[in-house]
Image (tube, one colour):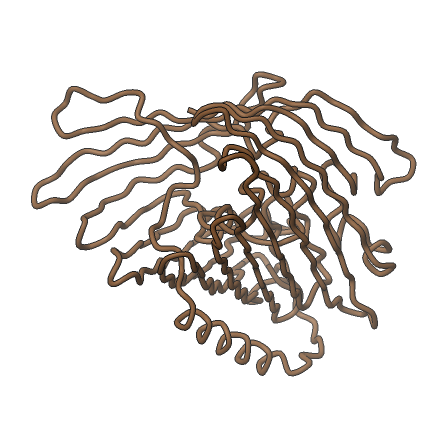
Length: 395
């Protein structure tokens, strides 16, 4: 997660303090989403006969056609394929819980990714795997591989939900899951709730420089939220620190991330926005969800504005978003800019079946292009423009 050479800070402490103050002010002036939810849908297909115990099986498959063009590597050609996961990652999961004395409940979540086109999974319970103890008046304490607060809530603020702008790319950087982690979700008090957690190894082999072994990336996260009617907002504060005993040049370096999400549902139209700041003590060393961060990034500012418009009695909707990112790079006078424009359509037949189409277009300035694939996100499999059409089956 970080290097050791000295890089001009450009009053970074003042920027962080100001951003944190503005975010906290907005947080308590504007209300937020309340409850924490597992980052997947679910339908109770099975119930045990062991008394007060439940087992929920859920999943999603979304086959479709994907057309990718504008490759970063000009020696490549356009690509068309029948693909899996055209609306977010396909998955299969299990949620179990059982009643305990005094109103407590014990539970677990196991979820694995799927590839419908090949019939293969992409790891045993690689998406999430944790056990928990909860109480209506005390909240929930979970241990294991747990989705981060950003991951659990980003699909409420991104118009494309976890499809992430027809899977073109994640221009907006975030961490999806924490390994070896503990996470506490509070109960709701007058609309206010929060999540606090820590991870002993949040990134592991996802640190960009793996030679020698990068060691453990420790992290702490705080996520206060408040919910009140049509207005929603959430603040995320995350601090990463790399601990390594093998002489790795990143040992002791850190990355601080601040994210502020908000939205307003007008009824016919829903508007959402995101703002993020990542500040590295030297350079940013985290590889986010499907993103290769440039090891030369010192500060990243990112944002998204989105809109969702229902078309036919809320069974159909049009989504549009603009996502941008500006990265300050070590040893570079200019900054790397990436911009993504996305447009999509979804029609819901019922709670199980929907069809969708989407298009995303990514542009980069000259600095970003000069380090394409590093400072910027080139898109799925190295393409900077992508179109998808397909169906999604959820249970």
